[in-house]
Length: 82
Length: 146
Image (cartoon, rainbow over all chains, first blue to last red; front, side, top):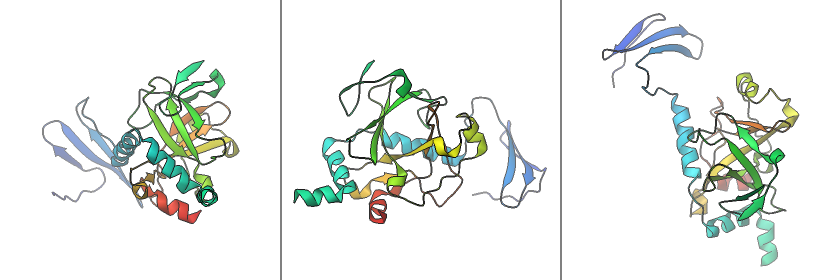
């Protein structure tokens, strides 16, 4: 992995048409300005993780699993059944 | 109005029950309207978030406060503005679960709660900045804490 040191206001160029500028450096975060071709997806990593997690959640849950989850949530009911 | 749901058969609902995610939820930006349905009358913790545009799209969600007394999501003001800046008491909060055949491997996404304005039914899914909350908190641990 390439690691570069930059000061506020300095830029990095990737290829011909992507420019990344360190816009502001704060105590615990930096502000980054990105100039890239329209249509090139740029997103915060956690948004991608959030979308992937939702996609996994949308998978069908079968009835057996649902039942065991409900049991797990209600251990008291299970005791009663016994 | 009636709808065929993914998990709960055919249900009737009213306009007022519809929850609107103006920006969708992450990964499902085009699906905006949902119903929140309890699985069982007595089961306070487990609910189904059923999409109205696609009957095959449904999520299983929990009310986090049934399991985690100290769960304290802190959404940004900007996020809250998107659902009409409701006062804290009227915000409903749910978290989406990922279920696995092996129940032990099931998890809940505490990092990305669904926040609903209880009065206007406008809703948003946010990513919290607080890194203590995991995208995949094992379900087993929640139940233990309970």
